[in-house]
Amino acid sequence: MNIYECLKTIKHNIEECIITGKNGDKQFANGLLAKESFIRSSKLIGFLHETVKYNLIEHGVYPGNIFPPLGFSKPEIKLAGYLKQKNQDITVLPRNIKPQETEITWGPLAHESILDNYGLDYTRRSLVINVRSQLSSLANNSDTLFERTFAEAMNLHLI
Image (cartoon, helix red, strand yellow):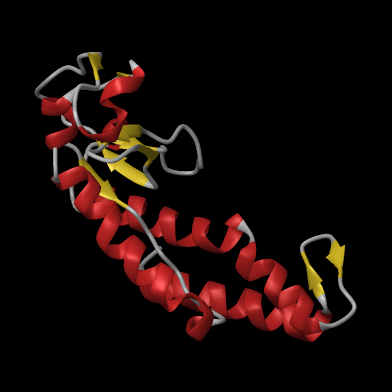
């Protein structure tokens, strides 16, 4: 599915929630509550994740290196950045090197004896895609949205 088809699907699902007052099997008091439930669910972001993975494969990325695999929401790859470890939305793992379990000796986690399952070299060669959506309450969430957009990428680039 391309991004246009993905957005049409999301739009259709939101409209369906508003009209019927339902999100999947759940009936709500009104369409706005059903829409809010859909927006907060993992189903909406799942459409975007699948579209990204599909497009990666369409452009020649080996499917076995994409995590979570196409059609699945797990397993996510937990990479260690400078500030913290985090499960990544979509990761394309490198084919030419092997992961190497490494004790974290950098940043705030250095004193906690935490193991990084992949190692710095492997992490630096991974392609990481994190997806953020904002379909409601933009005024209430703009700070968080901007902070995450910057901080998640910076966390991985500082190591």
